[in-house]
Amino acid sequence: MLDFLRQEGIEENIIERIEEFRRCYPVLPEDEYRVSQPKYRYYGTDIWNKALTALLAGENILLVGPKATGKNVLAENLSAVFRRPEWNVSFYLNTDASSLIGTDTFKDGAVVFRQGPIYKCAVRGGFGILDEINMAKNESLAVLHATLDFRRIIDVPGYDRIELSPCTRFIATMNYGYAGTRELNEALASRFMVINMPIISRENLSKLLKSQFENLKDDYAKLLAELFDDIRKKCDSSEISTKPLDLRGLMSSVSLVANGLSMGQALELGIINKSFDDFERQLVTDIINTKISPKLAAADIFES
Image (cartoon, rainbow, N blue to C red; front, side, top):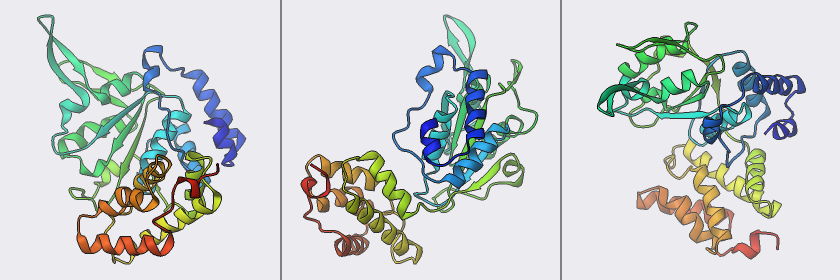
């Protein structure tokens, strides 16, 4: 990952501070399996610089942006760069204080405390990924307030008060527009350094495709990046919904072509069918067919 950062143009003094962080806080052997091995890389030097500097300064960060901007990819990449065990928390209707911190349970006939992901992340120096934090209930948010601010403590009712490890960080993500989301309250927002995630450029998307499929021809990497950008523009102009704007779907479609499907079949599964409206599906099909031939096969788009 550090070599990748150098390729992205990250300053050497930042990389040296990351190396020092790794030396000061080696991962525990029992937590090695939680150190992320990202499948995808995040491309964007400016965002990398902001995120790395904030984390090195001991801050928690909030990644804000629309769909397909790479929020979760960046969060996973950051955990891997710092070589910290990762705990993922997805906020939904039933996420409450006990599911975050922990709760009493029986073990060998005795009542013991079963640690939750926030508790484990705090005491073991992990990176906590708080996914879609603006879907959290008030009860869940109250748990995070003292954890995320300068106090860096967790009071466990009936047990003890714990202090966060100096290498614990929290990376939250949020996306306005999903069902169930709401405005983040000021008290919680003030506990983060906020990074507005930009839309991935055609150039960076082309690089991402080439990083995953090394034998993908340059022309087709650029063409697929252009196709994705065209779909985004249709979403921005409200001609179609954001459902077909699926970066994971695009990557998976290329993989399906590599495994034998035609380009048309692969994009149908990965992009077109993400919309459940017949009229919208036809619009997306038309967008794709004007840009790329549905009859293309692996032999056409990959180097032999």
